[in-house]
Image (cartoon, rainbow, N blue to C red; front, side, top):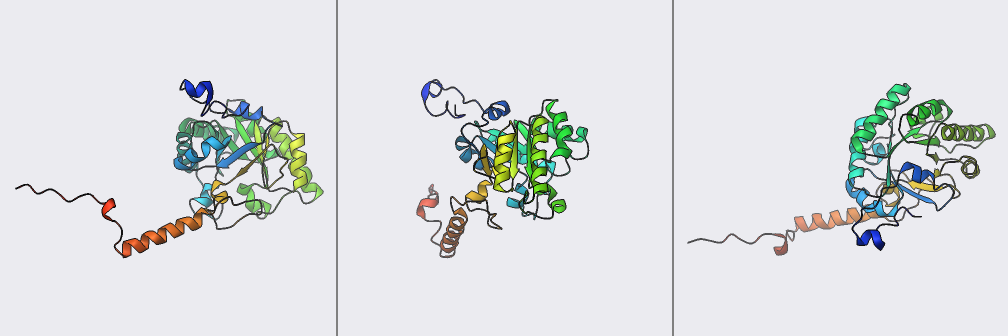
Length: 288
């Protein structure tokens, strides 16, 4: 059953019933069924546009590069994630909202991870958090899930570990690396994660991990065989052009349209054709 089955038509719509937001357990239960659709969102207007089309809105720490112009996700702070997470929750009604835990907010200790996750969930109203890491983070995932925090894992290419991984190259090219990615995915799933993102791996690894772990595997640069896919919304819309990863497909070129609109506006302002009569208020009446 689709998460959006009660929206738009039918008895629920006729009676004015509110569409129920997808929960983490419901998301997990869709393992192996209809592919799960996931996109990033960082703002209320974007969340409003995407909400009815997706199952999950990811408030990713990729906002550091997409919105703030950083060259990696490492400078992103907990406060940034909370502000953007709250904005996305306000702009959505149906999709499961997951907020990334940024670098340095959970690696130090189980207690630090819980404090950060609790802040995110309390201050944003999101349904789950996402954290990067494989076997080394499994105990932390278990610690959080046992304390009421739904966790989405993230293995394979992990942007927060770009310095130790040696760049943004695909993972799993050799047997040792492939075995490591599989072991990471199994460990995170067994620790209690309700789902996991599998990023930037060779296709065979994407297929194997999806078949092996019991929770939904959401691919990004992995395999069409994954239980779902996630991409950065600004990438598919052509709004972020700093670089284009191999796994991105453009579904629109809005960046060019924005530039063209700005150019037309600038020309009209400089030519004094804007504002026109229809854009200004009438003159004041004279009282004699």
